[in-house]
Length: 189
Image 1 (cartoon, one colour):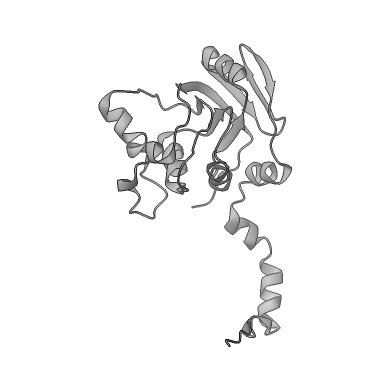
Image 2 (image 1 turned 120 degrees about the vertical axis):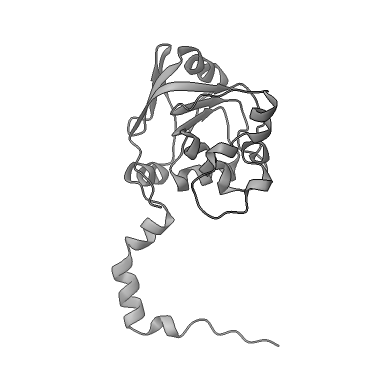
């Protein structure tokens, strides 16, 4: 499934006022048996929803606390957030692996400090412009940082497969020259 380009994300904001939300809370392990990228939205925050601990509307933007996406590496957590309707997550910090999984699957992670995150949550609506690297809401306009390569990938909808296919000519040339057939030589002692 190709990744949609991201330029501007705007709309209402859902708020999950919690810190240290790990991937097992986002997408519990019992739902990791499928390999499709869709259909995970119904399992998002499964235990919290079922117990009545939280209620979240399906809005384009989720604002949450620090250290979001900690725990084990599972793309399913990102797939669930996207399938539920989120296009961006704003938090003071993210787990490194979760952040990477977001950028490789078309979910925009935006790092804003707690004060600015609360301001976006209080505004209830926001406009995130990836090209300008701004979050605009009734409470103000806030800049965020993002790596230029990641920004390019998201603006152009380029996942790892799409990046590889951009080099298909060079790959075909390499294979046609017979260099792909040689492979590495290993010697055991």
